[in-house]
Image 1 (cartoon, protein in one colour):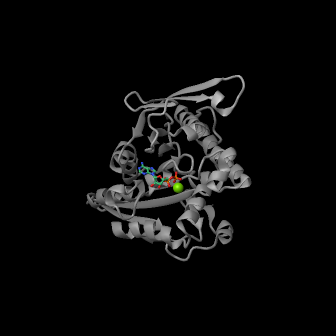
Image 2: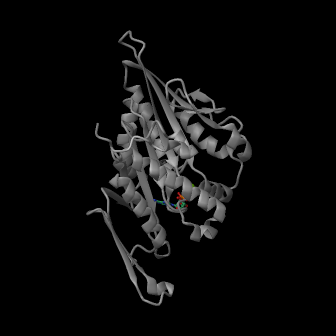
Image 3: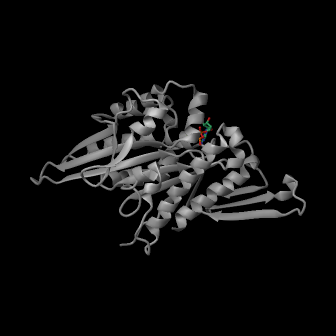
Length: 329
Ligand code: ADP
Ligand code: MG
């Protein structure tokens, strides 16, 4: 079986400095060229570092609708057809991960990938008259335990079908799109923290929203049930430890986050290396949670969010390097 590569799409957030001489983005050829002038940073041997990257798709000045169509739609469709899937947003804090994933709850055209995926799932499921389909979400509206409780509280376990389950997080049936959207947006608001705190929290933690689909044939009399799920992941900020002060993350936290992102990378690399039969899922909670939804027959999409301002050149290079490694595997 040919192991499937991760589909990688780059999204550049709008900035005031698009005309920067140090970064050239060409969506038509899918290339990004960057120059870091070491002289600007006070290095004596005025060295110029330059990089050139090539991607299947670069989205610049794209609407939420365009991003969804170009990147996510296909993945969501295969989940409705019975495959497991994962969509991840990767990038430094401020690069637009949450805008891409969640977007606005009030402005319809600014809705992100998750609410659009919910709409698509309900729309496509509504058209399948020969299937009885149940859609479930984790119940995010019941009182959420404190951070410390959560750590010991929410344990990732194997379920009876060889998949992954989370102990102490119950599932609810969503009969209509609104039920699912409530889970997303009310669940967000259920965390009684200020926007600033929320931003800080989302820089440090991975947010995972999962849609579970169960489908049985109405026409055949077999008991065959098809289960599939879609994980929508807003990853923790990928900024290197050097920059942590600006995003309010301590050095210890940054080291931990970088480790967890590198475990994710190791898993994806192992999945696509045909000569390896061990995939190191158990190294982190995130990879453990995603273990039945990455690689193999699963559809994996990574959106690399970049902030193409001169002050973020190094972070941009680091994000594009990560995205390139994901693509090569
Ligand atoms: P992250 O989650 O990666 O830290 P955010 O999604 O919170 O970043 O984005 C930072 C800010 O930039 C937010 O105010 C967001 O609304 C804005 N932003 C990001 N991407 C876009 C975009 N493509 N169009 C308009 N505003 C954006
Ligand atoms: Mg965010």
